[in-house]
Every structure is written in C-alpha cells, then in structure tokens.
Length: 533
Image (cartoon, rainbow, N blue to C red; front, top):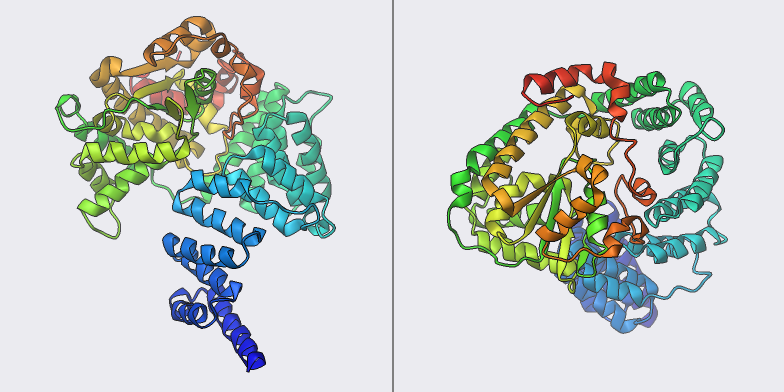
C-alpha cells in the first residue's frame, strides 16, 4: 500500500505541475488542495500549493502553505527563498529581509541556487550579499553556459555599490563571452568618461554594421555610441547616433503624448489653488520627504546630500503613493479599470487622511526607524497637489534644471521603463511644457510648503543651497552633507556612476553642442514662453 500511495502521490503532483506550467491555474487549484490534504507530510504538497497561490496573487495562502513546508524541512534554502519571494510580492520587504538573512547556502550549492539568492538580495537592496552570491554562482561547476549573464548581473550590482573598475572588468568578461550583448555594451559605456586611448567605438560600430540585431539591441548600441562620441567631443557623430537610437526606440512604441498632456492639464484644473488651500482631514506626519520633478534633473544629487544627515534615510524611487491612491479609488469606485481622466477626478474626492496614513504605512515598511524618509520617484510630481492634501507636513522638494539642459539630459537617456515622451523631440517638448505649467501652478499655490531647488544653483553656490535644503527640512547642516561624494550608500538610478564623481559643472551647457539637433524643441519651448537662453 505504501508503494502504491507513493506512486499515486507522484502522479498527482506531476499532474498539478503540468497544469501550472500550462498556466491552467484555476483548474490546478482543487488538485492542489486535494494533494495537500491527502499527503500533508509530503513537503512538495505544500510547495506546489504555495507556488500556485503566489502566481494567483493569493499571498496570504502562499505564505501559509510555504510555512507548512518549512515545518517539515525548516532549514531547506529552497523553501526559505520561496518565502522571501512571496513576501516581496506581498509588499512585506521588512520581513523578507529578515528571512533572507537566515538563508545559508553551502559554497557548492550550484549555479541556480546562488543566482536565485543573489537575485532576491538584489531586489531587497542587499547588494553586498548579491555580489557575493553572483561570485559563488560564477565559481560553480555548472555555471559554464551562464557565465556571460552572471558577469553582467555582477557588474550591475558593482555599479550600484560604486565599484566601477570592477564593474568594467566584469562587463569586459561578459562581452568577451557574448559580443552581441548590447545591454552590456550600453552599461559599460556609462561607467566612465571614455578617452581617445580608451573607448569601445570601433568594437560597437563593427557589431552594429555586421550583426543582425533586434530593434532594442540596435537602440542600445546607438545610445552607447552617442555617449562615447560625446565623451570624445565628437558631437556630430554623437548627435547622429543619439537620434538614430531614439528614432528606433520610438518607432517600436505605442504612445500618445496628447493623452499625457491632457492629464497634466486636468491636474491643473482639478488641483486649483483654491482647492489646495481648502481645509480637509489629513495625516499630520512629517516623516516623508518627496524629491520630485522630471528625471535627470539632479534628484539623486539632492538625495545623497540629505542622506548624509543621520536623521534622514532614503527608500529610493517608490510607486507607493500612486498604488495606495489607486487602491482607495477602487474601494470607493469599484471598476475593472479607470481611465487617467477618471483617476484624476476621483483622486480629489478621496479621504486624504486615509491616503496619507496608507502611504505612511508603506513607507514605514521600507524604513521603520529613520526620523525622515526620502521618496525620490521623479514623477511623484504628478501627485504634488494630492501629496499636499494628504500629507500637508511632508516636505516636497521640486528639482528644476535649465529647460534645454533638462530636455537634452532626458532625450539622451535610454530608460529601462517609463518616460515614453523622451524619444521624440516634439513630444518631449509638449510634455515638458505641460509639466512646467502644472508645476508653476503648484509652486504658486503651495508657496513655502514646497521648496524649489535649481540644479544650477547647487553648482554655483553649493554651501548656500545645502543650507537652504537643511533649513527647509528642519535639520542642521553637517560636514557630511557638504561631502556628499563620500556617501557610500548604493545608488540604482541612471546617475549611479555620476554621483560618485562629486560636484561638477561640465554637464550644464552640454546641450549647446547639440543646438542643431535640439533646435525644433527649443523653438517649441520658446513659443510657449519658456526662456531657453
């Protein structure tokens, strides 16, 4: 009987996994339930149940099931890593980090397990652990076919940690193993300023000319070439490849800038000065510090200055505010999907106190102990009015930059996701104008409740700008804040390489080397009344 039960168990388990692999989740659910009830002492019964629940978004059930597996095999790393994954998806990063710290893999655990632990550590911001696990994965006997990807992942983590020489060395290894890894070429080009004696232009031109590349791969090489030609001050070739990369990227995107412009205009109409000044229940916490604005304007620089103060920590770029807002809208106005216009209108009717408290709870999950916590998602600027209504004591720091410098910095950045307006100069100008007009209204309405920091002022009067930041945040200026380049915290933004270099002004007028390329954009901004000289 025992042999028959064991065979029956294996057959049922295989059937469930087959359904899951075919994404027949609903059909698999009763089979999972039967399996765990009939064979509760089989650890795989609980793992497969947890795996299915996780993919269905039933995170409480997923955690309950994997905890049953851990009762049977409490020290098994696979179950602990799965629990970490469930906790991350459930939004409980604090507990996920605690479980992560309890996982111990033997040195010879193999490529797959070390890579999985590295990936989870990376997701939770434990970059030193991620690095050590990628190194172990590379040293595994079964890693041979995966070495190129492992070198890339290792280099990415080293870039976050500011270990740029090591990152470049490992990207060289990745590219040697896979010369067509265009993402590695792009990352390598960003690490340092290239020189006439040390660059990768010929290597990339050869690949671009000879290889059969996907649109994304071609785009990545074009942006990498634009960056390296800029470093060499060959601005004509840089502009050529920049436009080529942006055009290719835009040609393979579905995007309507008019819809975004309409949303920005609607935000102005809904969040009027009168509405923002009106009294309503709110959350009185002063813990959050929002650093917002358009991308590539200097938000990372301001973040690293402020986090040199002992009372301030950064939670990075969070989408928690938008997420809590959307969840509350769904509870008050149930609907499968709301349009952007509906979301804006409904957001102004929310219980602002509930919104602020919900966001604060998420923020505390990210960093439970710091007096002040920074959220530096640039496009939280879309929620400036709503942030003020929900959290009137929160600090809102709006980063501005010269219009042309800002637009050029955005245009030359190949974003991993988001900012679809950035790949066509006319669309970029339309978005910039609408965003500028919205922020001008918020500046006027919020007055001293919001601090505007001009990037150029940071460069020209660094100590004075830091003093202004400290005064606004109700903290004392420290020597560490004035030596922000010594900040050892990891940085995962597009500026991760630049912020290690200290304060420099060379990027201020870089856009002037591309005036011919940018002239249509400049004309649009000027026509809209935005000074560009």
